[in-house]
Amino acid sequence: MTQLLEVRRLRKIYEGHGRIVEAIGDLSFACAPGELVCIVGPSGAGKTTLLKCVAGLIAPTAGEVVLGGARVAGPPPGMAVVFQEYGRSLFPWLTVWRNVALPLEHHGVPRGELRRLVDDALAEVGLADVHTAYPWQLSGGMQQRVAIARAIAYQPKILLMDEPFAAVDAQTRADLEDLTLRVWRRHGITLLFVTHDIDEAVYMGQRVLILSASPTRVIEDLAIDLAAERDQLATRSSPRFAELRSRVYEHIQRAKRAGAGEVRP
Amino acid sequence: MTRALRSLARALGLPAVLFAVWWLVSAGSKSFYLPPLRAILDAFGPTWSSRWASDVLPSIGRLLIGYAGAVIAGVALGVPLGGRPRLRAALEPALELFRAIPPPALVPVFMLLFGIGTPMKLLVIVSGAVWPVLLNTIEGVRAVDEVLSDTCQSYGITGLTRLRVLVLRGASPQIVTGMRQALSIAIILMVISEMFASSSGLGYAIVDFQRAFSIPQMWSGILLLGALGVVLSLGFGVFEARALRWYHGQRSAHREDG
View 1 (cartoon, rainbow over the protein chains, first blue to last red):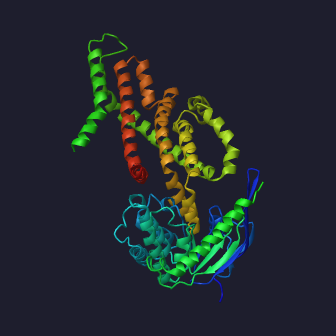
View 2 (view 1 turned 90 degrees about the vertical axis):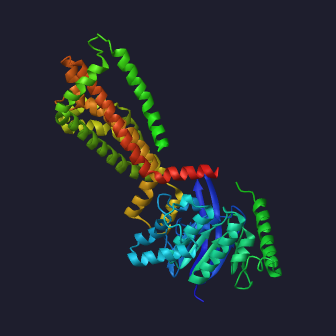
View 3 (view 1 turned 60 degrees about the vertical axis):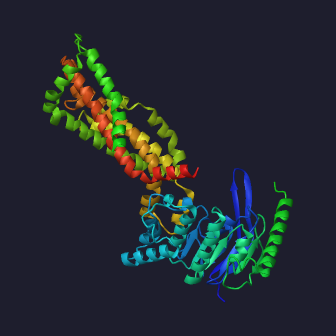
């Protein structure tokens, strides 16, 4: 199968203030079109760095990211990113509707189509009735829904999510996970989902990439052979879920110990 | 409605008391230089109705044009300086030097170079009022949220849209703070530029009355300047409330969250 996204021997070293930090050691993986891949790793594993390299927001020190056959040198078209800090990724001076519409306006989408895309995207995330509200008038979970609606309306081929639900309460989080799965299935987009939550990774993913501590590489590429249709109660209480989750957990514990044992100047 | 009335009463209360005290204390004044407030107010109408077109309007016109020039120049210079750390590091010492020069000290220089006409007066206003706008714009642009900037970049929002929707709006709380400071500086410099060498304007009129020993008229000019400052400040308040509605709303929302 041809891959949509390929990360080849990616390496990222930060230099500054007399210190050299090797955030990503040597990292390779690929995503097929329409796949949902979760990335987990111990905290400080350079997950955000990896995502920013894939998004073209920072340049890798070595290696390359290839999306749809083209090397990523800056933010590529057809890609949307949902950040963890929903409160800082929406424009507080624009209404919810205008926040979702802005990327489309900038890229010159015709008025009628733009209106349809924005209305549909907001309806899909359950926010059809707050078009004229400002983001700061909404709860955290609703703000993240706006960010997801903005990504949907943009019609990306690939969607990157960087610990998107780390800052919302557990109930909202479960709702947002299911919303994300529905959106992924309905639009057939490729989804790269970064999280530090093992349960979330196993629940959401078709595959889970387990990262080592920094300098990061992929320890294991685990296929999640759960039923395609996930359910918060049934899936999470199935024996297979427990098996997969403890397998990921063991890997991460081992990665943490290895990371802690390493003393770096 | 009662709340609006109460806040109006609070705003006008102290000034009303001060005027009443001034009125009572000065009522029997025989001093030539400190005439009764009543005499000053009597002089107010006749004095300024005849000088409205020749002095008051030109002053206000120069003030507004000079102020607008300072705001435009401050923002236009502040945006690139705020966004480029290297450029900022290179220019900051020079900016600090120029900023340290009191603008009235430049009036004689500008007079030599540009004469005593309107261009000189506008330059004096711009040269003083530009600083708070410039420095606050630099700070505001530096403080534009990184996540929001990444968001713009990832959606390919660049160029003028980025400037308009991200940079200027993101920096607007600081820019507005700078504009507020610049407004009071602009009024001061408007008066000073007219006092040096001039044939029209509020500052000129006040000096003219003083030289002609028209003391109540002189005082009435000072009152008129005070009133002008109050009106401009109120107008600015309305502008600020509209431009920064999101900012104040967001801040009160955060406060409620604790």
